[in-house]
Image (tube, rainbow, N blue to C red):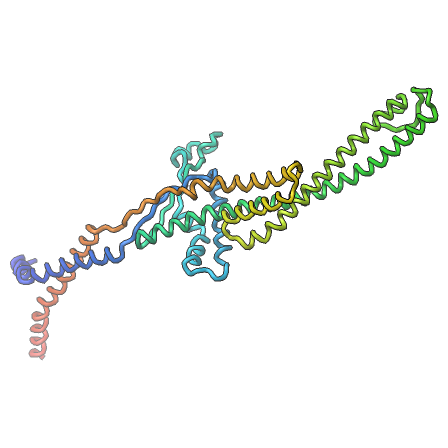
Length: 373
């Protein structure tokens, strides 16, 4: 049974030490919370990538792979290397980036299997980072935002150049094949015209003399020679026109090859996606200087490259040049830290005081036991 009178005398005798322990613990909790306080940085990035759920997963994979590539660079600053190694983990993106959908997750579940494509639309990306100070947090947000836009621009540009390269190879093969076909057809048509002209000289007075000219429908050989001659010369004009267009396509493919030859070294040299696009646009401008203004075919090829590159860049520039301001929130919880310190310090003081109180009793019991021995 507890003797409350003794407990009260104990508390009255040691209350100063208990208060010192409790307030000392509170001060210690306050000091620790201030020393090790952290900040949560929040930022809403607009969905300039036009990404839905499936495309967003591909974006995360692209960002992860790009970070792995950048982490392998030589002469990296330790801070940059640490960032890239963090970005190289898909888990990091899942923990720090949250897509904000046009509808709630509950509504999204209800729309599964429906034809409503807006159900999976992503409005923005919510970023949450932790830092030891507001300046460090702002710096990390700047680096992350630059990485997201730069990596997206780099990957999109690299994929665009791959498409150009494949198209150029296919175009050259197709053009060479079709050119050979039409050149053979051109030679046959010229021989056909020479034969018709010879028949016309041999039978000048007859417009309906038949001959053995072959045709697709088998009826042309019964037409007048003059009619056949006009039709064949029209075919000759069409063949020459086709060959002329094929030669222009060949020039366009050669120009694309020249652009790709200048672009490939830049892909390795320039790792910043937005700067890479700027340098590629400079390559386009240099190639255009060598063209005549009235060279419509080649200028059209450079126009296409310029438009494709600007399409990637202009989608990012508004958010990159005028970024939204982050929200910085302190995670410091002074009241909780002080409360834990107060009770913890008081409990520690209570245990110490109990030890001091019981120590004489223990010594007397030990002495009595020795006397009995």
